[in-house]
Amino acid sequence: MNSINNIFKKFIHPILLHGTKLFDNCRLRVANENSIAQISEPIIFVVNHSNGHDFPMAAQAIKTHFYILADFTMKKDPIVNSLNRLNGCVYVDRKNTESKKQSKEVLIKHLNKGHNILLFPEGTWNLHPSKLLLPLNWGCIDLSKETNAPIVPITILYRGNQAYVNIGEPFFPIKDKQTEIIVLEELMSTLLWKSMCLFEPMKREMLPNDYEEQFIKEQLQTYKKLDLQYEKSVIRDIGNNYNDFTHLNIIEPKMQNAFLFNKRLKG
Image (cartoon, rainbow, N blue to C red):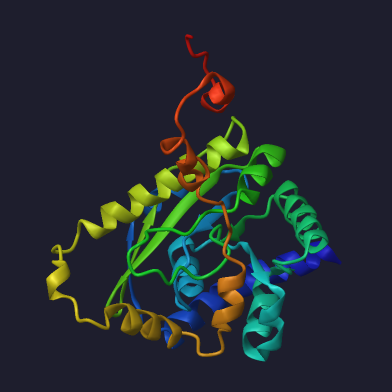
């Protein structure tokens, strides 16, 4: 039954792609689209996330079929839920540890069966007007190391109604996930920077005073049902390492507190 279901999803995938072109007004420009044509194994596509155009733009750029990881709240939207199920979707509750564990197991099964998957590792929309990326979740690193599937980073940058998609080279993490997620962040940031180089730089003084407010408003218009407060609540908190150690700047070094500096002090 599952094999028939998968065959149907691959069969209907071109139809869904055609539908996204009809109903999404963004024009697509793709860089390095041939980089995934040489990969025969299942792929973990990881894409940055900033608005409601991201899924159709990523799907059009990738072309081949994939299963997507989406939040369970998307089930409340009957149209989106129907499209997700037709395409192939794994739902997850981002605030529930057991749900995240179960969704990971399902994604591993899909990869081991030869299916591609697509993740948004930021875990939510990046509505910050100046940050390239929000902190990335390292679930994609775990998936890659457990299945030997390559990670292909993809970034999307918008200017007006033009979407610039940049597809990176396959990435195989081999070190610990804390190290490799930083590598992935650097790869994706570089892809975004290369897309940004296509445009003339804009001086800060040229921006309107309400730029941030207008930026967020424009992004939210791409999917008006988004629960902004909920999305803010699931941003990955990695802490601030600098703040964790600022106390060292005001402590007078003595033998009694030498352990805080991790080195011996001479008497």
